[in-house]
Length: 636
Image (cartoon, rainbow, N blue to C red; front, side, top):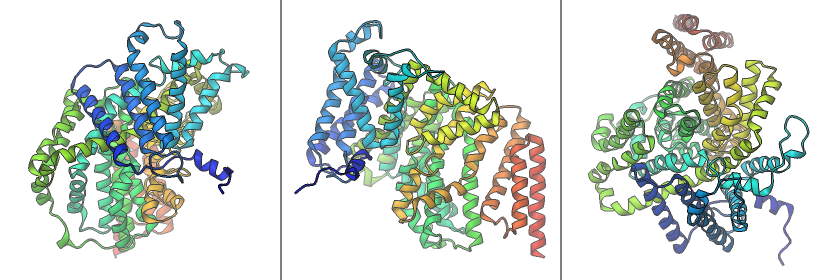
């Protein structure tokens, strides 16, 4: 006899769902919706006009429907399609379909001033519930609880005394603002997800489907395969290349880590170290242009700064991050004498390029179009078109062209589900903030807490971002953090670009920051190691990512802002500092470091990072002299 639900079973119901095993009917429906969605938004990216709000209604309907088709409601329940899942999928189509068919009437009414019909109110409330349930299934209760707290504040905030009081808001007024304006659910976050991020994810999925991941791996193997710790270095380079396109730390880990982690373990790395290297490298993919975890698109929309300017400014910090991770891997391998791969089994660089040159066409296309045309969505659409040489030069893909194309497009839309749902949930928070002016109140509270101190404001902002980022994708964290933390940083005199890129970095680092380090958990699922130990080790390997944002806050020359001489001095000194930091974290730099040498090197590294450009460069040069003098003495 079945027992009644226990508290444990309810806790499992509240947890995120798992991917479904779809039957032929559900899979066909999913594929049809995905293809229609992909073709529509690719056409929009190429310049076909559609009313933006109408496009967002279609996008949300498709994403919610696919979320309920692909994710279960219970992580321990059946993976087959259920009646509840089908009903929620149909409700999603019905609610968003209602908004589409009523678009003419709704576009003519004055939000808040003109009353909603009873059906408008019912549809809006059901749609909000569907978004929260899809968020629970795809992301988990962390984001649902966070969104619910903000919504409850909107409902009952008028009963709070003091600075956080706001005027009373009726259910109709809240629903109107959140659903029928462009400041809530269909606000900037969902707009960027649908009209910008979507096309880049499609490009990444097509690139991966037609062998782009293997191309990146072969390139990495050919470059560093004969060095100490070769599999780990391949992991760093291939994760950087793949992550720069995919923009998802978790997807990067499961894609590249599935073969790099076992190779690292076979080469002598511990399971924890191998998993941590992959997690740290994959997290860095969210910092590397052009995609930057999709946050760069949101950042451009929030700040008004051109997307091309953002990715150019982000290049050197991202390169320094991967340089530091790479050197940490190298120093660990040298210290423990971990061998190289068999040179005879490695692919040759020029042979790989000669064989797979076609993969460069879409990459060059997307870089050129972004920088020259400053139209990111159009650039990604052009890059998708640039995949045609791959189709034409690869017989294995030419033979199954339509099959691979359909699967690639469908996989791309599936990857957008998480981002779309997260951005929809973030839109509810942003809408509540605008209704209640909570943004200004939180910024004021941060100022009060920090007592006007720049350092304490930064520490408070980091704490807010890391807490918000627990288990959440980068775009959603950024959408929330940009309206909560950025105003406080900018009010203290921080440059807008520096402040927002600072937030992007700590949003990305939530993927390896305990206790909810999703990249570490993904790596742990491959290696079978303790995810918390992996997360701590990954934070140590990627320590520079916690430091670089602080550097460009006080020295914007790192973002290529300032005189050429100051930029060169800052970049040179930071490079030396990153190299020295990798020695401090591993206890090895051109030889084993004693405890005293390690402490002295740590002090010199800290001075390099906190001093101004030219003093920092002088300290960096002294550090180089110290390192090489110590090495010369050790060799005598």
